[in-house]
Length: 314
Image (spheres, rainbow, N blue to C red):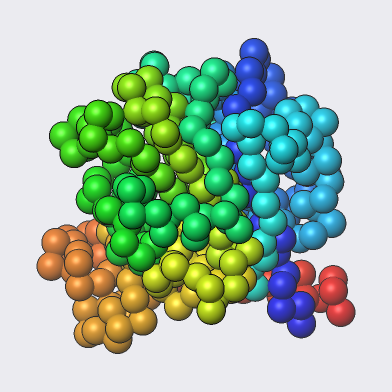
């Protein structure tokens, strides 16, 4: 049995896209004909592409060649662009979706223009030296359910529910006259493209962000040299990854979407794919039945697709 059955690609690129409906249709058609195992989500906006997808390796290679020919997604040395691979032992997404959006990552601040200006990129290899500087204010730009899984040592957690709350937090807690050096990080780098562009527009002069995000740091920096504490939340059914991008032990509650530690899953309120201690008391009997029916259907569909792949690989 293949222990790395799925190849996972995370990407973004800020690039002008003129006709989103046409490109969306092309991507769907290509996947159906050339990459039937494709799953995950791609977001298309006038400002570019963002997403994480997974497939059997041969299907993934075909899809990335196609996306690269259209949008240059492999242009990792270009500004406002990132691309990386990892793997998953099980299918990490239920289906394949290509969604049109107004913004790749919603901030609702038109002055944030990654096409025109972004903060200074800092590589994973350089990151420790930067954040060791006592004059640097280290800020996590992610949402609260992500930061509970892991965070950099000494970082400020803004405790925001959604990214659109970040500008208000900056306005209340940071000052361009006082905070001369601000370093930010996020999962894969894209939120910091928007956040750093926004902060430059607000008058902050020395704004830094981790190139490739936490994922690149965990992939690159050895655990014994790391300043990362915990795991990194990821937006797929792996839920979390650790150093060397090894799959972590966290799960996510399908009832309320809260990340759950191994200790949380031992609680009496936890039912896999159904509920946890955060939400069980608030779930109606009708909702509970719907969740159980969905979980039973998912298990049946996954077993059928996994058995079919095993037979083809034998």
